[in-house]
Image (cartoon, rainbow, N blue to C red; front, side, top):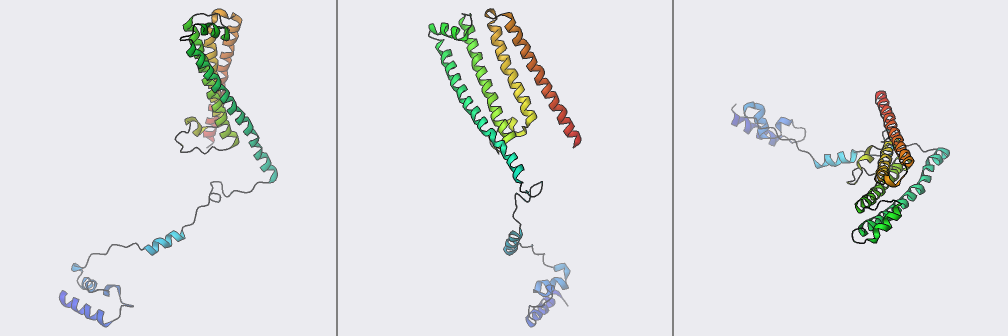
Length: 260
């Protein structure tokens, strides 16, 4: 039987028998042709994705539960006493709010110092007022301006220290700020913990002490040697303390890594 005859025979067969229960190869004439003559088989049809199956899959998807799907398992309700002890961390909230008020005070202080600095440019009497306010005997205008600028830098560094204590302390000891993905998130806040916070604070204190020591050396002619000696000793103690804190933090980090 040739191919044309096979096609005609297949067409008659499909007409004579209903579609229900029919063999898959006999659904259409070209399938029958391909069954008889494989060389002229029609190309396989591409699989179709039915909307019904998509809707079924969407219905079968289980919604995620942030509590039961947590890495440490489902959250267990705390007993009253542990819950009270854990909630006591919120007692630190007024302390951090008070530090925010202190930040506002430093902003006002910075504005006052800036006004005094600008007055030195055109007001001759401002130089005597600034010298008396700073308690120095130096009358050189350039030196006085340098001391005032160092005072402004001192205010800024103390303000930075306050920000680190407020933001880092609240994040570490009170509650999460949930700043992940925020464009203004501080770089150091992404990996902050108690040890990192202590190192940051020690570094900031060293910077503030350096500014004070520089101001002392600029006005060295008006200060006793004993005062300059003690300020230098205190600055060295700050340096040694910061190095010790950083070294302890590094030892603890290596110990934690070796445990893992």
